[in-house]
Each structure stands twice: as structure tokens, then as C-alpha cells.
Length: 371
Image (cartoon, rainbow, N blue to C red; front, side):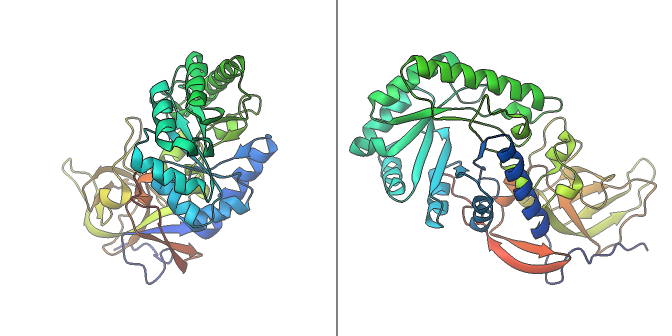
């Protein structure tokens, strides 16, 4: 029976387990920092992807201007580990408890957040009270993703409401999330530029100095120009994932995160039944995200021709090509998840590896901090 060497998965690793290749991680961090710096932009990486203070420290050491986070809880974790400039890149609805947490955060770090309505701006200022001036806001505009964000022509009105509420208005931001689709990064970046330009113009016409114009997702960050933005907020670039592979935004050599798994069942197929193996890594570690255009529920690091057509909670079904030997029971394979942000929110810690050896384990400290 054909066996696949498993020396790439260190001894002492029980599957499934998340592996971070320390060298690839470092290379990804340095390369993005250099590329963004060369474009005259600031880098504010989205830490919701990794949720790990050690990785945030590497990004800041490489020159990041600050961190982007998704929630107040994530901001609290990274502030407690020394991050001094944090942007909550979503519109918040602030009640009394959120206001108290923002007050505490603003005492230890520079805090900015998103707003996309006059009502939310008024509520935030009212709840923060005399601490409203300690929190900066950026008006979120919709550049084509059609999630949150006001139309660029409405940015000035939202900014005026924020100023009346006592908040410091620093600029505008957008999320070109529609760049996560085949053939869309270039067009999404162009739409981002038009939206940021239009929105910034609306703020300037209303009397505001626009200090920050923030954009950029992983697929589009290197397409963003300094004429449109002052900073970009990619997140997935630190690890890469199967989505980025299929979009052509990274290669297998750029993949820093994989899930180590073991072949627990194998079937040679026949009579219309596909050749397949079953791995002990399912949706509870890989995540269940599968865009309609994706070829499966992830890819195999060392066998890119294989496909994962189905996941259950604890198992992945892998269809194996006829021209390649089927792995043996007990073989250990590395799976590239479709969307690494989900994977990192499903585990308590990760194994940091180099050359088939386990270096250390990092806690996913911001895991589950969803509010």
C-alpha cells in the first residue's frame, strides 16, 4: 500500500491541529509591509484573521501603523497586549455597556470606529458623553459590496451628525468585499477609489479635514493607490487560504496555515463510486465557508489535484484522482482551509512549526470575542 511521508507534520501533533509555518508567515508579513510602503500607503492589518497577539506584534514590528479589529472584545485583547492604535472597522450601535468599554479602551489606546448613519452617530455621542471626543470615527461608505456603508454622497451628512454628537471625525473608509470573487479584484479596487474620492469630497465640502481614507481587502490591497487611500486593511494575507489560491492572489508557497489531518478511511471506488479518502478534519476545524465558485471545501497542500466535495462536522471527504496512488490509512495530510478567519476562531491554540519541527504553541487569545 502506498504511503505518504508525514515528516512535514511534526511528531507530537495530534490531528486535527492547526499548523502555522513560521518562515512563510514571516515572509508574508514582510512582503506585504514592503509592498504597501512602496505605494506610499499605511498598513493597518485586520487582526480578526489571526486573533493572535504574537502575530500582531510581528505585523507592528514590520511597520504596521496600527491594527484593524472587528469587535470591542478583539480591541480589548490586543490593547491588553500593547497595541496602541486600533480601528473597529464596522459601524457600531453603542449602548451603555459598549460605551463604558470604549471609555476604558480609549484610556490606554488610540481608538477609532466606523459609523454609517446619523442615528448611530447620535447614539454613540450620547452614550459616551464627555468622553465622546476620545473616540474618533470614520464614515463607512459602500463601494459596491452592498453590506454596510452609506452611499458616498451621504457621507457628509453622517460626518456632520457625528461632529454634533461630539465625536472626532477623521475620514472615510470602505470594504471592497466584492473583490472576493473571480475576476473582481481590479474592478473592486477601481470602485473603491471612486467611492473614497467622492466621500472625501463630501466631507471636505462640509468643512472637515480628511485625515484618513481607508480601504483595501487582501485581494485588492496591492491594487489600491495612494491617490485614493491613505491606508489599507488586508487580513488574510498573513496566512493565505484556498479562496486566495483560486482567486490567483497567492500561490501554494505563500500558504502559512494548514490543518494537519489523518486518513481514517480509504476507498478505491469503482462502479460509479469515486476513489476517496476520509480525513479527521471537518467543519469544526476547517470552517464551513464555501463560495459558489470554489472547487471544494479547501485544498490539500501537497496534493493540489485532489478535491474536497463534502464536509461533515469532524470529517472531510477527499476525492482522489485516478492517476495518483491513494493514500494509506494513517497517512497525515495538510488541508488548506477555504477561509482561514473561520478556522482561527474554532481553535484555542495553534502549533508554530518550521521544517517539520514544532517550535511552540500560540494562544488564539481573541477567539470568540464576538462582541
